[in-house]
Image (tube, rainbow, N blue to C red; front, side, top):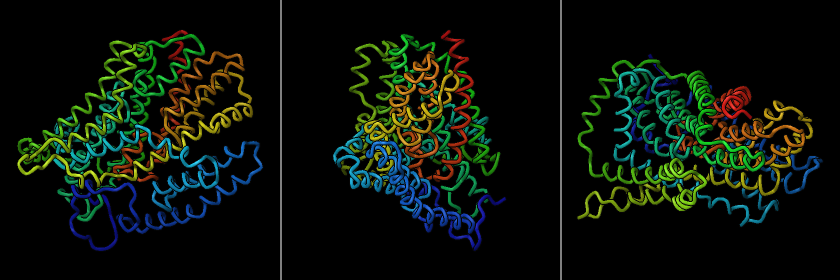
Length: 537
């Protein structure tokens, strides 16, 4: 059975390990293995975007809209950048940089104000996490983790069960550890699992000798499960993701109703469980694994584990750096569980043990822990770190810039208020639907934290003006702010898995929009019922 067919004679045998170590987010057409139909589609998509992006920007900027000039120009530039991101006529990170340049050149804001948000600690989380992942891949730690998971007989024999099991692990971890940190720590293992599957397919001659391991559908499903599973799991507890804390605080301030830790979990867990079922169905249907079962996987994995031999000094050093980083990432969550999120201890710890700073400090250990002290050789060299995907760092940095400007210029508030006035919202269900849609739309182009901070304050006065209790609509907006699955800039976890080079932007958009719709329906239908059952509001 051939999984990936391509005209012409097969080339030399693919080095799977090298393919994953040297993967890049953006690859030109000549760097990919494409069928003639795929190549025609890619050429057409990129050519259309080259002309459509400036056209959309110019037309929207010239429309006679009742908006401040600063907001209209920002909206026009953002629409053009979104077209660039979707169609890829230029590398996606460059599309974001073009947008930032246009913001300054067209006078939306001064240069220092435009690039200021790029200094967000989330950017440092990316850098540190990518360096840690590079060490885990280089020294085989990720491969050991992957073998441990695949060695479970009930998991390893089925590609679907591999994806689902990995998603469960991700969701449960992200309930207590930040979504970004969870994805960062599990990414090397996911790549290790994918490497093992790709090698097994190659050894069993189920793919062409020169196949592209970065284009496997099982890879897309596994990577998107990692990103989306973290977003779903982050909703389970109030400390799972920053939008939860932001929304909970704003709701308490507006209504006087406080949601306790246990109450939140009882309310969110059934919703998240159904979301996870929907997520698994969407990813496995839209990115159907090349084969359902991999016969002989257990024997293959056991043989590979034996070949790995004892743990090396480099692996031990990598595990030390990784363990220190993860421990510090988890520590604020433990304090939140024991002392509460309102305690001065939690505020001090969470403020000082910032996940971005922890990530770069943990990565720095890799350059301090020696593998051969006499020769002054350390766990990682700078040449290894230089190969991380700096394009993803640039991409998410520009996403943070646009998200910040959406709030600072008042464009997000203008969109929300204008939409509410136009739609004439007057019932709880109508305002809840509007809250969910608005939160998802804004979170697609900015961070989920910014989405919650912008949308919840819009929804509360809209509900109050309609003489409706804002609790349910505001909480729905809080949940929906963690959505936004279509683009790499929507959430840090999307950007991290996109940086693996395994997920094409078109696959992320197709899977993301499907889960956006299903997730929105689940929030609108289930959240009011769970609030009434658990909180009696």
